Length: 147
Image (cartoon, rainbow, N blue to C red; front, side, top):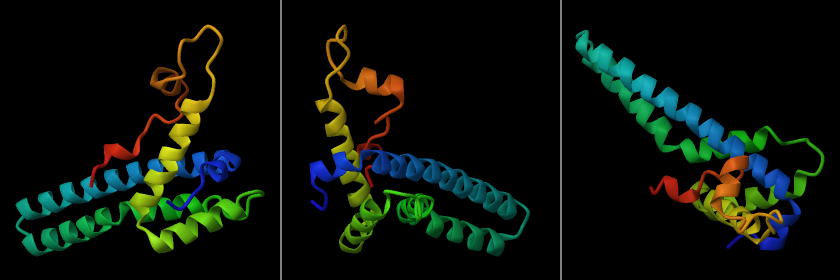
């Protein structure tokens, strides 16, 4: 574990923005990758197998790095903003020790735990997934990409 629950809670807004941006960038990477696979298939059917093979290989290599790239782009978007230096430094140190998947999963788990600990509205029975799903918070979990 690289982060304490209190540290994540103290810088919750920054970590939520990092996770949200990382997921948005990951979606763009997925789209680009699969478009490149489509172009590679088209090239293969147009009798250019070497171009198709090179393009598909490059798309695959790009896709393999999507977690690191998406987390890196999410962090760079926040550099220089007030109050982000300490969480970004902690994130950089964690990334030096672990992979991007492990670090992002840990942050998401801490944020999910914070969401579950918050009291719900007086008329609401629990502050479970239905509340988080309605607000958009915590709707994406670390377990959706099991690789």
